[in-house]
Length: 173
Image (cartoon, rainbow, N blue to C red):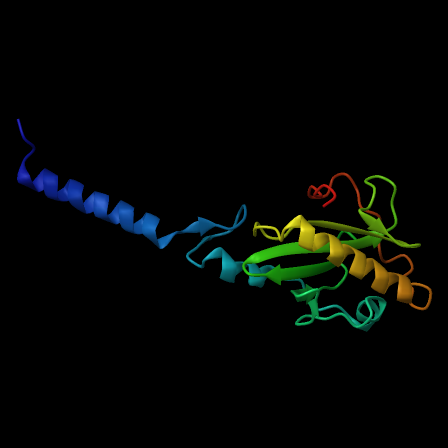
């Protein structure tokens, strides 16, 4: 026996509403955050760190947001974060990578190191990561900038070593 016409109409409306909600692409960005209809390529910029001060900028040889290193845009050079690291966000064609500068550490071993600092990288805000072949030269470029300035510019007691309870670091490129 077929369903009454009213029930078919209600079911059709429910299906249309469900499909519309999925089409909008509501996405939960992070735990305990409200849903957002912003596409990830727009919303990740809201999570960029606040701009670094003069001491961090000088340590990195004047590197700042908008600069390009090896054809990849610097989206942000941030203030020292709560874990005691300098965050540097790179962006290229919808991909993003977070490079972290920390005090030198043995565990986990840094991918690249200078006399005082370790350089690591990881995903940024759930964005697809820049391919490893393009990240590796960035790590060496950041380390070279640190080497050129680490003897003249010091951040004593501000930076901390990377620890094992931080977000997972990516394997060497």
